[in-house]
Image (cartoon, rainbow, N blue to C red; front, top):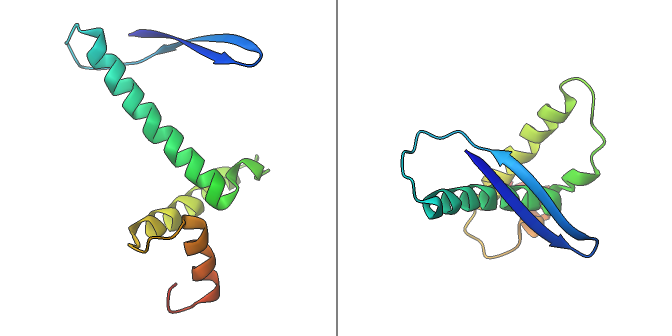
Length: 104
């Protein structure tokens, strides 16, 4: 399935085409749009959390398996921090784990 998107920025309009594979046979485009937006929202939220909590965008790991290994080492603690029921930010939970061995 081909999906064409349009985005509006201060520099103008950007257009992109993306291909998706699916076993769905529903012909209603609204069903596909809902599923694609939901998937992209999950991806965007995860990336945002990794960047905010672990400064992932500032990482300069590029060669060999370093980038993949670092990604795994970031996602594992992120998963554990999300499981903690305290009502504080993930960044504060990460700092608390660094300073308090019992919390860790």
